[in-house]
Image (cartoon, rainbow, N blue to C red):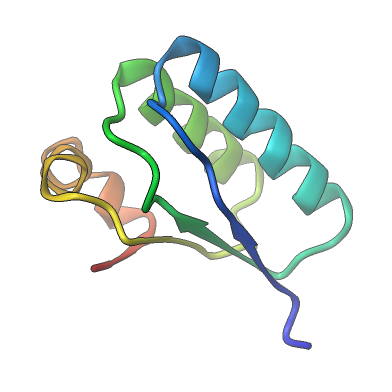
Length: 92
């Protein structure tokens, strides 16, 4: 295994969704994963709380690459406009 972990958040990444995602990511990272793949197939939208949570975890784990897969066009646009895509790989 290459140390990659796929995380499948579901629901909006708003304030409560951001807390759930943060807890999921911290748990995976504590186990020593080497790459995080976020499958956004079941995420309808992300707001500033979700972006902030994602950036905070990424800033605390700069040695771990993050990827977002299966994001809808709205989320892709938000991640691009907020320049989050400068820090992670966005795959459609």
